[in-house]
Image (tube, rainbow, N blue to C red; front, top):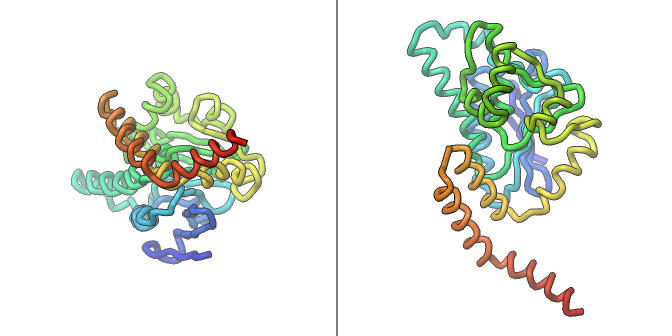
Length: 265
């Protein structure tokens, strides 16, 4: 097990390589509610870019330390100096680039909401491909309480995920959505009754980790094309491209032969 924090000081990020091709990234600032300071976001981007270079990588699991907060949004102390137009744009673009690394990661990124995802933390969660929520966790776009809008690309993500009506409801009311409603709306893909270190998450990850890395990359490529607003032809082009590469791979023929040999008995 390799745990380190290469770009964020004082172990604000923990990166762990686990068996089976999963990398776990923990936002490790529990005393600050795992707030997303700019150096943390930069470290997150670096960690994802580094991890995805491994062709055997199957998925990334993103979580927060503790059980109260996944991430409580931007670090207001760190952001207090952002006071003019250029500084706001620069902050927004740099943070968006970190979340874009999550969106564009060539393998699935699974956000494990061990606690509340608030403001920018909710935007980070929505940048992931799937979200699993602890039973007590909530997610909320509460930026309006600070008299601002969403900041890091999370607005478009939310509108695409839940539709304009529900996105407007969440954002205009600064509403905190509990795990049950998040599952109903399709924000959450599962509820963890035994936390991020329990059997529920292990059971969810098991079939992902059993899938060949090149197949996961082909599936994620389709998700990226859809997220970028590709039309049917573009999404179909991506699908076909990865079908060809996975079909001709030795893993496909080994799997097919295994099924055929069972049928012959």
